[in-house]
Image (cartoon, rainbow, N blue to C red; front, side, top):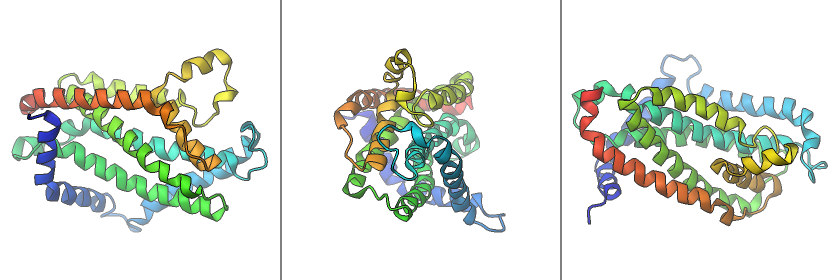
Length: 269
């Protein structure tokens, strides 16, 4: 049986060197003309963590019930959501435009088009790895290491990346044929961020709003991350079942739609 996903995986394996060299070229190209080079890849997320810790940590300290005595509690909560959401937002934003941005490459070169989403995914994971390492260093510095619960981050990350990949490939392919999709996705992403309890807590909302927020598929994922890093506990994986079903749906939808339209990409670019 020749499933679309399997044929794409075979193509990615065959062109793995092309994917990796493209990721490295993109990473080096970002800082080629910069005086301090890769230092900025550390400085920017470090600044973000410091600002969230100093400003929001003090202002919102008493808004986390049960954690009033935990130093930097809100900073830990906030960064757990912001750091992981940033990976989701970067992947979805870039996947949305990936075929349009590489239009010239698609027209001039013959390679499996699915390599482009793979390059975006690996590149976003490298950026995330830098920020996440700084966040872990911050937790170690303040004496709030999550311990063995940190292992639960791996399945959560896998679920998040697959969800962003399936949704992103579908929207990115659709954006080639309907350019409004790219603009609309940027707007929806902003609303989606503020409708997810990241810079505020769920108990801080009115009861009626809370009952709506829980339908947000990213809510359970962000809550799971926050539980790992703030409570040092394994999350309830059963709460992620709706997101897992949604991920499977978008992976299949993205693969089928991409395979059906990939031959028309050159004509539309």
